[in-house]
Amino acid sequence: MGVGSMRQKIQLQSKTVAQDGGGSGAITAWTTFATVYGTITTKSGNQRLFGDQIEQPMTHVIKIRFRRNLNFSDRLMYKFVNLGDEVTRIFNIQSVVNVDNKDKYLEITCIEGIATWALPLK
Image 1: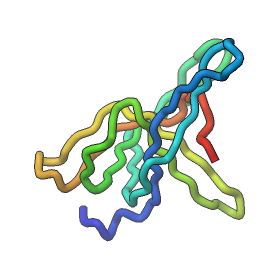
Image 2: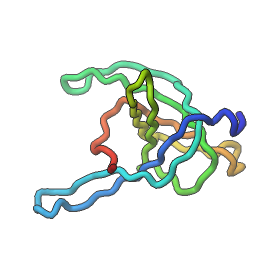
Image 3: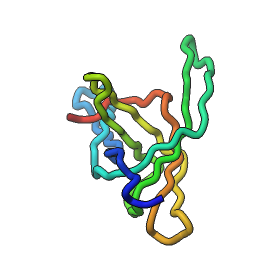
Image 4: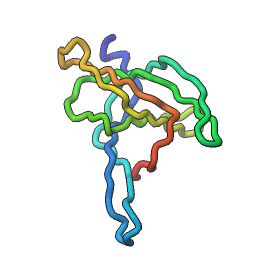
């Protein structure tokens, strides 16, 4: 797969935790530290009951150009417009693989459809 097939604009986000100042706890926010192009490939999906709700987690592999500053605690966000509506998809990182150990591409296995605990900062 060449760079030309990487057409999705993906935001790499890190979690920031700060005290709320009122003494009641911490505030979690996500900040974008890089925007890259990549490909998103769906690998599997299923349904499960979590609490009183049905979750439909989907496993994806997202391929981007190699970089060293991506951690398991980060997440990926993909925004696009579909039929006039802006759609935001959040991917929680499960694993990061340096393809063939050549520092050329990363294959990131992610899960979409599992709750994340804070919205990104605007």
